[in-house]
Structure formats: structure tokens, C-alpha cells
Image 1 (spheres, rainbow, N blue to C red):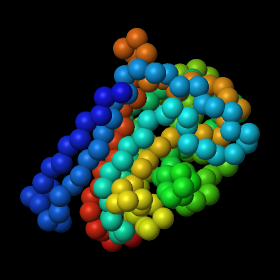
Image 2: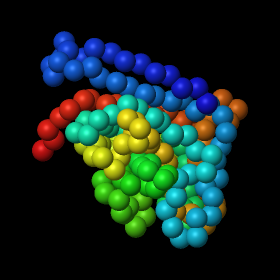
Image 3: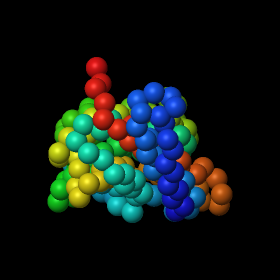
Length: 171
């Protein structure tokens, strides 16, 4: 997995703050979601993104490229890992309780491969932050089937990023 960190000054585009971006391009290591016994859990062996944050910061997580070979009994979502490795916020709902089947943008309209682009955004609260950082992961509710492709043989790299836009009022 290749991780890249980039910080840019966004003061010339308004807001007067520094935009912090953490991104990752995963180029190897296809993943089969573990059997979670009908519960939601962080994807074992899956990538995470960690970004500095404070309470009140506006964060957005973006999937720029991802390919999934689905299984009808496997559901996928993005999640924030809080204290004691608990999943404290899910992308599908924005709360600590995910939608029943996770984020529907991870599932194809027809059988077979599906490419993905999704955004999960939220204002950080104390439950999201551990030691000054927010950690984002893939969460699954799975019987242990399906494949999340991560660039095996140079195909289908998983490309994603989290942006911390700084303090914000979101309406």
C-alpha cells in the first residue's frame, strides 16, 4: 500500500485555513471480507486513513476508485474508529448505527464488477477523535464472501482520501 500525505494552503480560496489531505492508493492485496456473524466490524486487513482533527472540524472521505465483486450476504460501509477500536460513526447514516445494508453506492446495479465513487462527510465530535486523530476504515457486515479489489496485478487500484477542511458550520 502506498500512502501519500499532502497539505495545501487554502487561504487563497476563502476560509483562511489550511486544508489537510490524507490519501492512499492501494495497489496490492485483494480482500475477502471476514465473517462478522451478522454484526458490523472493521474490515480485517483493510486500509485505514488517519488524519489530525479537532472537535468541530469538517471532514470528507472520498472514494475515487474502487472495484467490488459483490456477494449478496456482504455489506460495506465507511466508518470512523473511536476509542477501544469501536465503530462510532458510519458513512451510510452519519451516526453510530449504520443503514441495514451499509452504503448502497458500494453495490452494482447489475451482477459483476462495479466501480465506485462515494463521499462521506461529517463534523467531528469528541467520539470521533482519539489522540488528536480521526481514523477512517472500511466496515463490513459479511458472511465471509465477495472481493474488494486492491490493485492485484496492477488492475483496479483502490484510491481514496480524507480531507480536513477545518472548523466549519454545516447546514
